[in-house]
Amino acid sequence: MTSPQTLVVRTFTDRAEGLSHFVLRAGEAPRLLAFDDALGCPVETALAALEWTGVVGILLDDDMLHAARLTSETAAAVIERKGAEGRRFVYLGPRLDAPPMDVFEGAVLFDEPGVKAVEFTQRAHALAHFLRATAGAGALLALLGRRAPELRHLRRWLGAIIQELDIPRPLVAGWFAASSAGCLFASSEAEPTYRYVEVGLEP
Image (tube, rainbow, N blue to C red):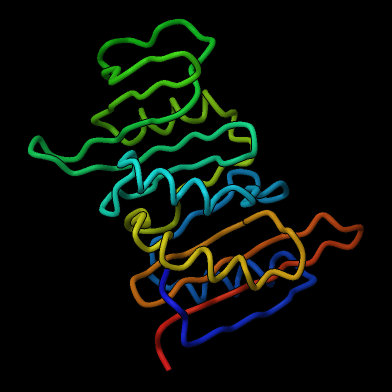
């Protein structure tokens, strides 16, 4: 994990003000947004998941994250991976209690008890499969950007950002670039607040 040289922390009482600040600071950087920003995405297990998936080679630094859901009980993701045959979108996550999918949608890479991996050529098909599996609850999606964040940048910055939180907070939105990153978190208090944390290398 890279040690940040700059740190910016801001707290907002207004949701719209927090989101507008996030979008302004993100600029053109790849970003993830909560499918349901009232709920957000729990991040308690995110750092451990990023670490072990990298160590065992499931998620590579070059992979781009198009969707993710991380909780203490389950995890699911859609990643973009470039190979000799071009771009592929791979769903990794729990098995679906649903009828088998049509063959044209995707190819099953493995199907073991409790976990399934399916490869798609179309991003829309992969995201549809992800949303069917998770119902979007606690999920993050790569939206409002030209491309999805790279795993290497999440691994570089997310730990430094989370350690600046005052209380455990669900992630509402995050942008991740090579030299900096920023995240907006919500709270579940009676009077909700939004905390924006940005770290970077620029002096």
